[in-house]
Image (cartoon, rainbow, N blue to C red; front, top):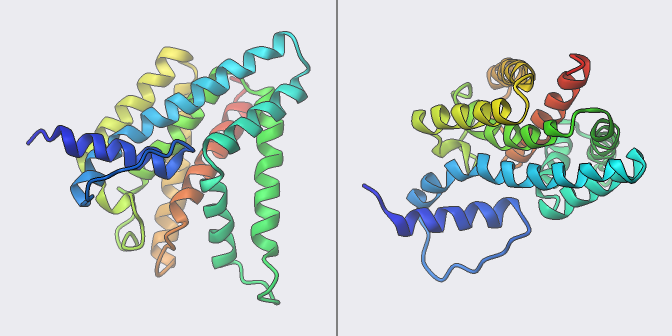
Length: 233
């Protein structure tokens, strides 16, 4: 049944969770709201990536290193580093330091991810920034299909159904076709590789932490950029 109220609340929930847009909700929320809001995630990625694409056009006037730094700053601000924080927590969860007061694995991981973003933003096609963000947020929905036993702690993936996955595939590949059809190849490889890796982890790991979703987003985005660069698209 079409429930406009639930859809609007779902959209607001996704915006509040993954962007710096903080809209107050005065109504009670439930699982159906999350389910109805899930499909907006690729569109959030599209909006985030499109602004990054616009910023990248400044390469005409300014040095690529400077523009790359601006894009990275924008990305961390618009997402309020929520996915970076989740990546930090996930790395510390699985890579236990000798001294529990030191969280070196998470710190090193975040530094490396930001350095790779900074380098790749400068050398990949500007259109790949759009598809990157769509792929990142879509990965939560698509990867839910290969996780069979470890979704209890997740806030988004446990609600994903077949129609979410089909729609997300369509949106992400349509985005690639519209902005740069060559990126369909990178997107395909990204989904295949990330799917195989997560499937293997699902067999070996007893339980994914709640922060795993942000980790999946960042790693999928980074993987997409790396594949795009290696394929010289």
